[in-house]
Length: 143
Image (cartoon, rainbow, N blue to C red; front, side, top):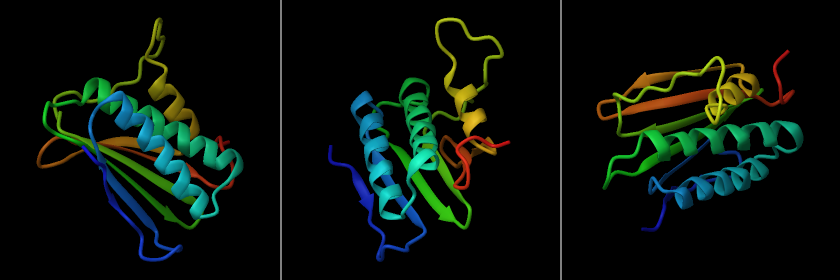
């Protein structure tokens, strides 16, 4: 399956969206394409690294916990002023993410998202859910 990419009409377009297969390859591609778009917007350094990590964690969670055979996941990134909003939508509404206070073998992804983002959450969709995070551009880790 080829990814469906919504290409901005100009370099200043504030939003980027694409649909990918819910596979490890799709998650890697989400991070690579997000990194490319961030560079196009002029987002570099620690802020870009933070946003890329959030994309990677949300995409990985979508692949591991939100996969429904035959359904893609959607990544949407928007830039507005001093932050980037990252949204990942999948088809599994009943599998809502919950951070683990004391993870053992895994479960650090949402703790990382909570550290790098100023805020994050989950919102329902007609089919599935959207997990979103707001990452500041001024500093990689909120104070």
